[in-house]
Image (cartoon, rainbow, N blue to C red; front, side, top):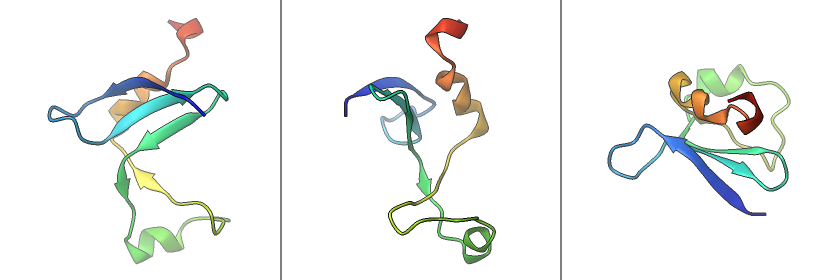
Length: 68
């Protein structure tokens, strides 16, 4: 899998960041969610999955190039 950088709101080169893959998916670099109450609210989280938190404004970078 290859990643294409989409964007970040970081000023120092750290997360959160969005990437598009060559498989038609989005990869999210964000803050690991560890809050037990938040994790209890998740549905069907598989053993090989995790969740991360990102600022909502970062999603503007996920817009398809065709939508621009």
